[in-house]
Amino acid sequence: MVIYHSKTGITRTFGKEISDFLNQNKLETTFISINDYRDDDMKDVDHIFLGCWTSGLMILLQHPEKVWVEFSKRLPDLKGKKIGLFTTYKIATGSMFRGMRKHIRCDPGDIMMELKSRDGHLREAHRGELNKLLI
Image (cartoon, rainbow, N blue to C red):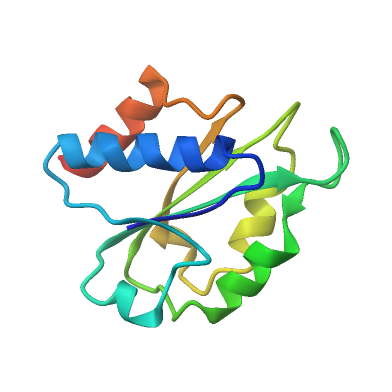
């Protein structure tokens, strides 16, 4: 499952490209906005990608937007799930992933990857990281 929060559409594009790549590689994937998420959606999900655009000052104090933080509090305990975080940014991600991590209920080892993109497009390096899930 790929769940995203986007302000301008760039994070949505990045999440969609992640979802499409996984689908093309035989990993059935659901792609939804945090606004469309329902608790039943998490049933039978092994892998979850959570995405949000980077909010904060240009190069300091980056954090997930409040709407995403509130959404993450509604999620069930994700212990045992394979989790990937993704974000989009203008200049730098800074402490963004640390901010995302602190709002997700899971074991630290459950978060397997962090992907970031300035323009919302999936790069070859991202594909390499995602391929590790497929092995």
